[in-house]
Length: 318
Ligand SMILES: O=C(O)CCC(=O)C(=O)O
Ligand SMILES: [Fe+2]
Image (cartoon, rainbow, N blue to C red; front, side, top):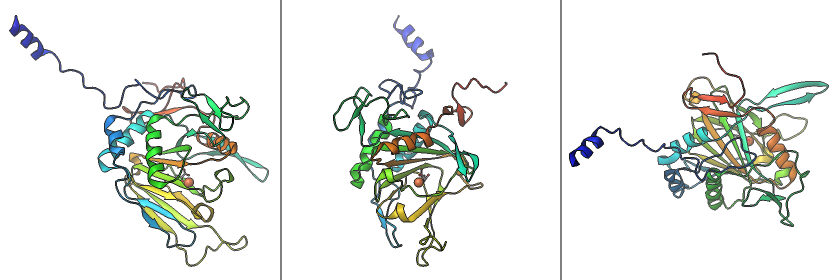
């Protein structure tokens, strides 16, 4: 009877809503990934079509400094969703490594979550995910890398392409940091390794909690620790969606850091994405060693609202 159908549909629970985070259909998978990474949702990928949301402001009024600051770069209506998507869908690591100070070996625990994708200019990924040599287009010999390079997943590839379009720079690496709380940080350093070539351009995105980005000039002479008097330290409170392009002489002359912070919004978590271009194999080895390492995989746990080890075999007693 016709009114039975009506009653049935009245009492039937509403159709389950499609999860906001895309399904793993058409996800980016690769033999090096612990699990596949979904495509961006339509709303975010459409939103990225409107990026950059603002023109970049050039900052070059200090000695050797050349920045282009987009406030924001990611359109406001998709920045939160992009943050949630990446935190939920990427795999992360908490890398440990040893350094030698004199004759003493020290273990360093990287004070943030990290992950990395990409390969240097000597190789590229074929559509089937295999690595080919950039010169002869043949499979890369198995001993070219100690690490196993990972292709950039489609969700970050979309951001890489818009970034290339609006900066005129080329990038083949994507490094991601997750600062879970104000206790996570990166100490003063510069990204001027030889494998990036001279005057490298690095595009650096912020998503999530606001954190201070500090910059200071390197000491100029070997003997004196004094930076040039005319260059002062700089502080940029980076907000979600902002992007800073560091270019020209910036890396060879300036240091940057994200210091630890107490209180404020830091505990809500912050993602940093940098795009870079590595020219030679050493860059690939370095980036995987320090951003993937040899430890376990972490993934965001939506219920516990924290990064949790994946399949570690260790569980909390309940
Ligand atoms: O988190 C940031 O904004 C900076 C990250 C950074 O400097 C790096 O990964 O080299
Ligand atoms: Fe850096």
